[in-house]
Picture: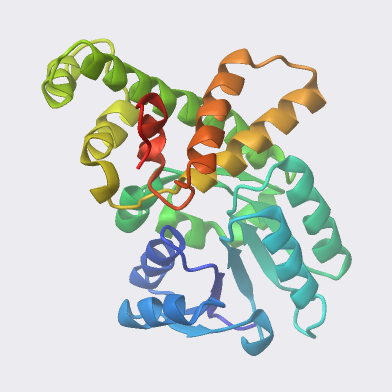
Length: 289
């Protein structure tokens, strides 16, 4: 099998992940359907093709697409190639337990091996190779791709069955969504009280109210439309939907998640889908930009 790592999905977080693998010494071939994405990847030193069908023989494939539908489309393409048998797949997208199990089953039946490894940490940690990886699969399958996982961050084995990693990621995204919205609501409260929200951020930074999301998203919330896009509102529309679906399947009530999801849906309806997720603070203001 080829020693080249095929990396599918070179978006805001996928590209720095691919660069981390390359820095660790493995040859990387990107798969990115967007011409603009391929140009960005080339400028970052990652060679690209438009489709997995153009990648030739594959050994290890990393998938970092955005949705379950895109993962299914990638699997469809893989199953039309002759090199899927014997290949090793690392699914790092956040698609939920059911979707990763469904697509893994198709790939495994065709002779591939699959590891489930969704990530947390955002673009900043992707760039430094310090992501948290929630890894599940058999011991042998994880060991076979361990060097690739290590290149991107800190793998934590959370289960021996594909889908266990996605289940942990669902819990993670519940907390992320709630914490982002809580930060937005708190800063909106500061503004309503006539306080300087930047000053409030600084004051609470050393107290018990501090959180990663407040420290990370808070400054971008104050930048408004000028905030750089590190993670889009649309990602949390998708991810909170995955959390809600998982909760229904488990018979668990999540009223706090539902309140946070409503805010992301409001932001989406206000035309902020492609803005940074910190833009959810706009839903607390009278006029949405």
